[in-house]
Image (cartoon, rainbow, N blue to C red; front, side, top):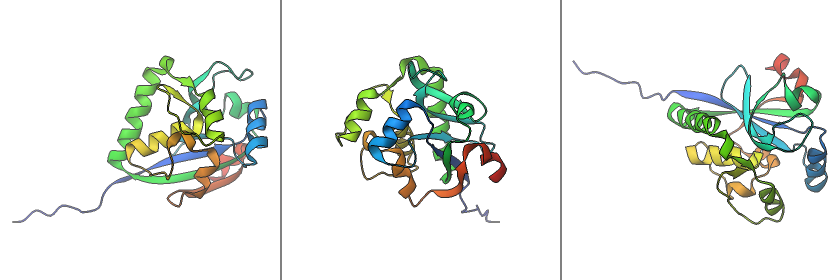
Length: 187
C-alpha cells in the first residue's frame, strides 16, 4: 500500500518590533532620518517576551552597547513605555526558524565578543556598505540574521538597512501599530 506524505510545509512566526524611544541617540537618529522608528528588534515567540537586538546595555547610558536581550517590561522599553512602535509578523519555514533561533542562541552564548557598530551607523547614513566582524547596529543585525537564514532577501547590504526599511517589506504583516504599553492588549 503506498504511503502518502503531506506536501504542506510547517511554518513559524518571527516578529519584528520597530520602536522610537526618547533617548538622545534615538532623537538624533530621528532628526537625521526623519523616520518614524529608530530601533528594530526580533522576537521568536508569540508571547513576545524576549526580543533580541543590538543596543545599550544600560537603561541610562548609551555605552556599553552590544548584543542585548530586550524585555517589554524592563529597561528602555519600561522606561519609555509610551514610545511609538509597530509590530510585524513574518512567516518562515520551520528549518529557517530553527536557523534563526540557533544563531541567536550562539550569539547569546558568546555575547561578550559582539559590539555595537557605531562606525557602521555613520557609514550607513553615508550609504557606504561596510561589515565589521562581530559589530552590528540594530537594523544591520536583524537584516543579517534574516538574510543569512534565507528568511528574507534585501536589495542592499545588511550594513545599509535602516529600521524604516522594514516598513516596506511586503513579506511582513503589520500586527500592531501604536504605543508600546498597549502592545499586549492589541495582539
